[in-house]
Amino acid sequence: MKNKKSVIISAGNQEFFNFAYPIGIGLIESAVNLTRLCLFDKPDIIIFIGSAGSYGKIKPFEIIKTKTASNIEHCFLNQKCYTPIENVISLSVSRETIINSSNYITTSKKISKKYLSLNIDAENMEFFSVLRVAKEFNIPAIGIFVITNYCFKNAHKEYSQNIKKAKEKLIKYLTDEKIINEINA
Image (cartoon, rainbow, N blue to C red; front, side, top):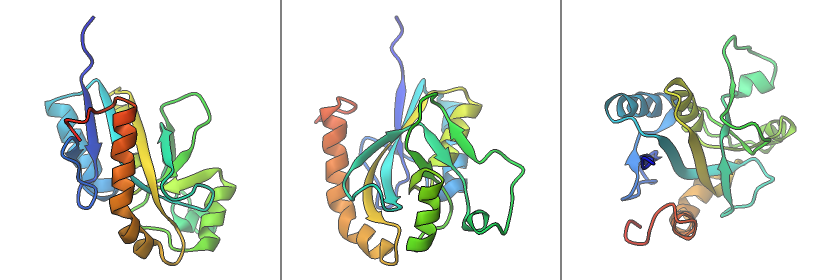
């Protein structure tokens, strides 16, 4: 049986890992760079790792594994816009945690509650585009996230205070699950 070639990717910037290929921040950079990777060195499996902000249900430093993402903007929650394109992607048939992706970070408890009412639990800027590219290339993909903050008023401050510890917890999880080995970490 042929060995599966998996690739571990991350956004980069503060979420750089020596065992992960950085694809950039936000929906556009991540889509462009992951597409380039898939065109020139197509993996059999994509594992996206990084941080996520919680809309209130999931606590900081918890780990989430999912294959489902949405791309819902705040204007949609306020019934001020619509989209003709697919805004939820799931590479799984089971009900999983939904991660919302946008080029903007939520800082409102009121808006966070609206996401929760749609069964969307957290946000990560890149995950929707990762799943969209994976779907286009017919590559299985999963996201593994550590919660760094709540998506409330002090979201950026919390993220900045927690990212170092969150990355350590994520690396420990990846090592314990044998997704990476200690040499790579």
